[in-house]
Image 1 (cartoon, helix red, strand yellow):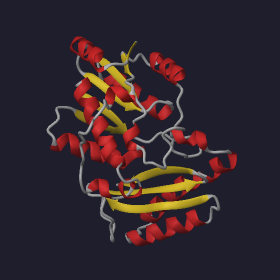
Image 2 (tube, helix red, strand yellow; image 1 turned 45 degrees about the vertical axis):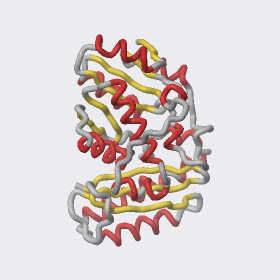
Image 3 (tube, rainbow, N blue to C red; image 1 turned 180 degrees about the vertical axis):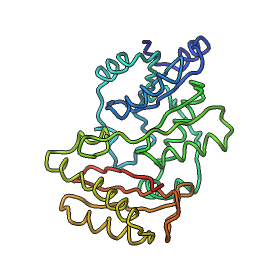
Image 4 (cartoon, helix red, strand yellow; image 1 turned 45 degrees about the horizontal axis):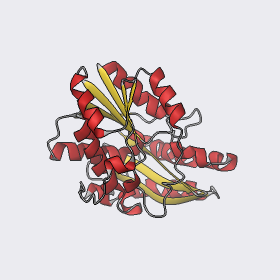
Length: 277
């Protein structure tokens, strides 16, 4: 496994990689959710590149960039164990040199949900992912369903900018009690960790109501909010039942539909979703 830190070096290596080349972008502090993507990509591709880069441009001024968890030594050991070929670990200065002022933006679908709650977030995401795609030239890139809006935004960017690669979205990986795996789970104390289960419980409630025949999307939102409101440590940011392509809120459920939510547990903001199909 090679660890590469500069764009010039990775560009020298890239033509020598056997194709297809799979790519898994990460911000490090890897957990089984990340590793599930890596394992899937390893099976599908002759070469595998993973990036570790905590992207400063997707964090807002009051967000957790400085304290975002990092453990490079552990990450590299995990990736070596998964037989990754290249780990690309650029610095912020390498990715955003002085006087950097070029941005990639996807409109409309970025203005809802995470985009409404975190202004500028997706501008940072699409710019860094576009740069990584340009630098690494993968044939396939892998993303997790937990960040469903992000996956949709990346797919739109790739399609509309005629990028020559395939985007694969893989299922959310959960803890045994249902909590979606996230690097931010490490922020939770024991009481908050227990309280965080309310996200999965609310999504399960939506699925249950749907399976019983409920098609009023506003009722699903109300019932989910009511359930979250019973947890003292939980403060909902949004609860959404939306079209899977536009992310516009639905009045009457049509299929498929994306049920998603963002909830603050103490000071930690968590997201999760399920697809009704």
